[in-house]
Every structure is written in structure tokens, then in C-alpha cells.
Length: 236
Ligand SMILES: [Mn+2]
Image (tube, rainbow, N blue to C red; front, side, top):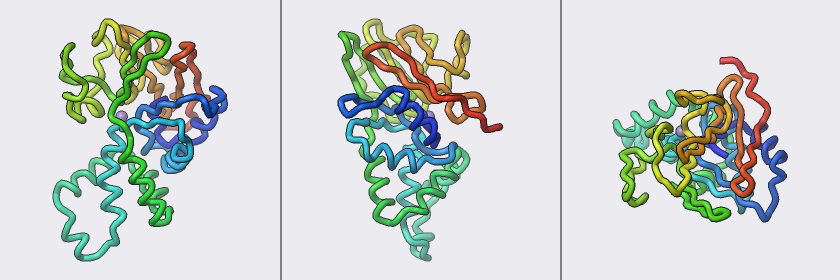
């Protein structure tokens, strides 16, 4: 799954649809936070799931510095330490739908706030998998500044979590790149906008859970099955 964006009900609905069990592994490809109503609630649920592996999205990246700042007591000293960079981060994050995350975060005890931050800091940047002899690379956004022989470790965080994948380009011949970040509604020449995108050894799984008429998707790598939540009925 990817880009849950605070859609707790859709998340539970999908877990039920995929009949998620202890022996399964769930990969969440980032952007759990922001936009939708219950991002921290989704995060707390994931914290209780030892077989869920979370990858960092640009929204977690924006959140992490800001949440650390918000954790501090507001004193004159803390305000003095508010440098331009932090301020810029706060503004960017706010602009990107941080409100629901901040509201729910503030309602937590300080202990839970610290646990949430530690949990997010543990998110992976990418995952490599082999399922039924097929290779997969899982990453939030894409492989910006792609070079066929470049080691994944040599990409910058920005290249992997912010810059959009080039869906009309096949990155690898023998490896499928699974990404979120770009709702499939926004992929050019996509015959099935709003559903999982499968082309050029790409698997685009962000089906726009936060968008009106969008949905949360899950793909089973063992069977290729696709699962969808009910559509988002909130209006723009
Ligand atoms: Mn994203």
C-alpha cells in the first residue's frame, strides 16, 4: 500500500479485504501522514503491527523535523532557536496538509509523541524484494537522476522521496519498481486512472486515497491481485 494520507477507515477496510494475517508482510510505501483526517491514528495502528514495514515518504520527511520542534515547550529560548530553515520547513509542511497530523499529534502524551517520532525515524528509504523469482524495488517517489548501473545507495533522499517517477520510461529490464507519491490519476496516458498502474516495469500504487473519487489500493506480490477501498466521498 502507499499514500494512506490519514484515511484510517480506508486502511482498516483494506486490511480486512486482504485478510491480513500475522504471517503476511505489509509494505507501506510512505505518506501515511497529512491531508486526511486521521494520520496519527493510522501511524499508531502501524506501530502495533510487527509485520508492517514502513518506507519514508516526503510527508514523513517534512514532518520529522517539525514534530521534533513542536515537541519542545514554547519558551523564549525555543523561539530564539527557531531558525530560518525550521520556519521554512514548517511553512512548507503546513502548505502540504499538515494540519490533521499536528492536531492529532498534539493530543498525544509527551511519551507517545516521542514514540511516534522514533517510529517515523525508523522508516526505510527503500526495500528490495524477491517474490516468486521476480525482483522488486520499493521506493516512495521514484529514481530521479536514474542511471542503470547506479547503486540505490547513491541516490539522494530527495531523488527517492520527492521527485516523481518517469512512468513512460523503463528503469530496469529485470526489476519492477514499485512507487507511490504520484496518484495514478495524474500519470499521463494512463488508461486506468485511479487504479494500479502497471507498465514499463513500473507498479504505481498510489490511487489517490485523499482525492475526491480516489481510493486506497493494495497489491499482493505473490498473486498479483489488486484490492481497493471504497472511494473517497469528501468534496474538494
Ligand atoms: Mn509523496
